[in-house]
Image 1 (cartoon, helix red, strand yellow):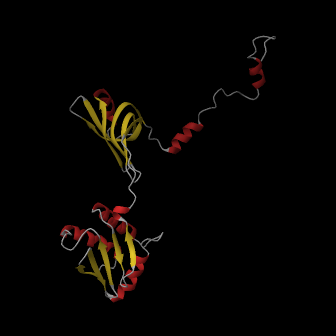
Image 2 (tube, one colour; image 1 turned 45 degrees about the vertical axis):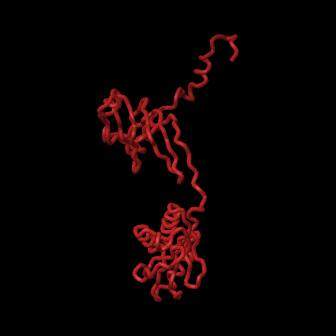
Length: 248
């Protein structure tokens, strides 16, 4: 092996069984991991388990070596974390494990692939609650109308409501945000995000889109409830007495 060659081994494939399209995907992800694409070249596929050999030109060989040795660090080089995950996800999809072997034959990066812990999965569940957003679509031809909400980058679809409620909400299309109350069916993805599968609207409210400064001004203008003047506090308290013999 040349002092500038790196081998990516995939245990479940041989050169005869590795599909060409999948080979291209592996090579693209491997190029992202190694970096220095102008000076890193595909050399060959070796026999046995599929071994993709890459050759790095001498001027960049030390840089690639250092980059690969730091892939599993707490703070890996820019772009290597994503490239590692792409390669490991591909291996898991192919029910494979892999590894990168350096020019001296030493293992540099192990890829757990199919052996990594399986992500927890949760069944979808239904729960009463609310969702907020701006109405960006409303309509429907059947007895049940449908609405789409957008809240920043999040879009909520598969929201059902009766036609009367839809007519009431129609003037608010692309207007102020609304809060829809009802029963939703949710799904939790393994990476921790939530997806709304369906939502049935019971009732709604229109949210005030006034700026925070205006809201605070309005709050400050409200007098304290049941406020009394300290000058007449004693007289007002005494006036609450019903009779001289009452106990307070």
